[in-house]
Amino acid sequence: MKSSNIVINQRDNVLVVLEDFNAGDIIAVEGESIKIKEDVPAGHKIARWTIGENENVLKFGYPIGRAKRKITQGEWVHTHNVVTNLDGTLEYIYKPTKDKVIGKPDSDRTFLGYVRPNGDVGIRNEIWIINTVGCINKTAEIVAKMANEQHQDENLDGVFHYPHLFGCSQLGDDLHNTQKILSNLVHHPNAAGVLVMGLGCENNYIEEFKKVIGDYDENRVKFLEVQQTEDEIEDSLSLIEELVLQVKTYKREPVPISKLKVGLKCGGSDGFSGITGNPLVGAFSDKLISKGGSTVLTEVPEMFGAEAILMERAKDETIFQKIVDLVNDFKTYFIKHGQNVYENPSPGNKKGGITTLEEKSLGNVQKGGFGEIIDVLPYGGRMKSGGLNLLQGPGNDLVSVTALAAAGAHIVLFTTGRGTPFGGPVPTVKISTNSALAHKKKNWIDFDAGELLGGKDKEELTDEFFEYIIELASGKQRTNNEKHGFKEISIFKDGVIL
Image (tube, rainbow, N blue to C red; front, side, top):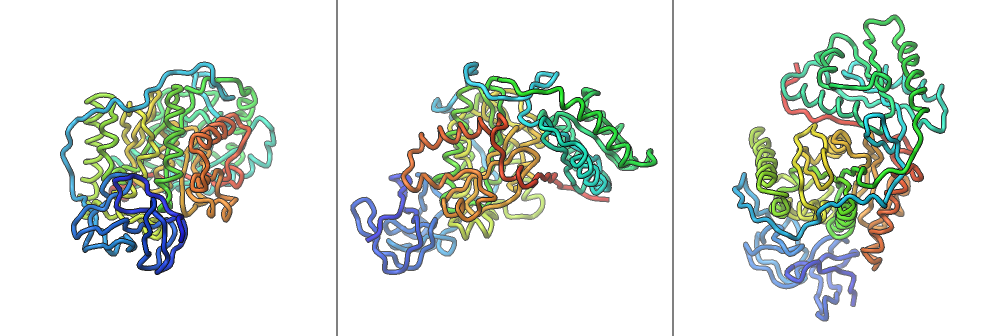
């Protein structure tokens, strides 16, 4: 008889198996024996008892959908016999809870960061090439490669470029979104110096882009329009030479942990995401917020079905209404394009054991812990104060990680049950939800939350993870995406391209 299973909440009528089971296996569930009716992969669900047709299927103590037909005890519970309960936009009532984590600045706990002249704090001392238009992606790549070959200094963490498709032939909100994301990257404190490279004939030409950037430090931000120079490579390298001199003036110094800003993201989820990785990140978020730090959660479509949990933690009724608008506006975006609002999770998520969007969302929102939600940011918005923020953005990994970095996150925590090598413009910490992935993909995974399935104490692992993030912020650790040069961006597109 096997006992490798988890009942997450006593209300649940399903349990999660921790290893592959075969038809006929007998498992022990809290003193009861259950016979498995069919082969069930690790991370998937079986029925604890008979679930009637149209009866809610409960996981995490909440409905994750309803049974299409009667499901008997020991049956595999998945997409073949469960359907979502979700449909269209909803109305919500403000029901605040007092059970939430509120930040209090902690001046005693510090990390080693770079204090910029405007008071912002960076955790890396990099030079970023931000091109205003996709036409010059390759030019920026060549300049970054040559600059890294020319400048080997222990106080310079590297010269990086971020290719993208946009900046020209865009209209309305699409152009504005491109400008906001690129502008926020220009302002990001992980970049000690920035070279803004433009072509000269694009919609987002340099003089127009400067209006979006606003105030900037002329010693830190340089501009080059490549159509106006005889040798753009040589002139770019000359400007980077000036930036390198600026970069060398910065030294790490102790700064309060309340200055740390962290993005929260999941991708390639599995049945363990809501049991290990996401709760671990949620516990980290609560701990950082309690010390005055900031976290930001996005992936709005993956809040659908769990949004009420977030709404009850709103700071006040104004923030509650902003969360309502955030959720319903994104549903309207789906409907406008003739798409099913709840066409999720992805094939990979389903293979990993996630059946419905409600199930994915109930796991997803756990990354926000129990923090009070202090602000709701539009796409391209930036964090203003300590606490838990929500950010408008899709679930797409590349787009959402870019948006989190552009919102000011120094680091992005990325939980995954299936793995991905992708990294954003800031250190992107890959947290495996199961230990098998951590062992298989050592060049991808930075931290193993799967230890929780092996009996590791959650508080102990949270403390270990917190200390790891402090070392990462202080430059004593590097993520795998940094080590292997996986630093990319992607920008949201909704409208017409000319």
